[in-house]
Length: 78
Image 1 (cartoon, rainbow, N blue to C red):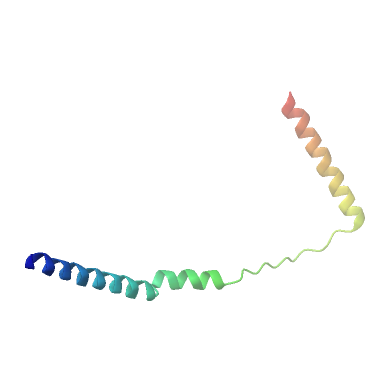
Image 2 (cartoon, one colour; image 1 turned 90 degrees about the vertical axis):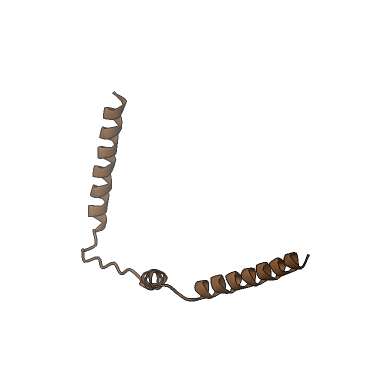
């Protein structure tokens, strides 16, 4: 009976040490996590250096796009 009490105490101490060690290891940031956080905080910047289309150019572009879609749609049904 005394042996079982000792085993219970040993088990309790082992669980307490394991919980403390796992808590301590998760609270410290690893190098991979730090790099991921640094990349996540970086805001991507997109620079567009093109001139805007005029109204007439937009209409022409839309007409050409529609004609291309209609041409592809009829070719795919054959």
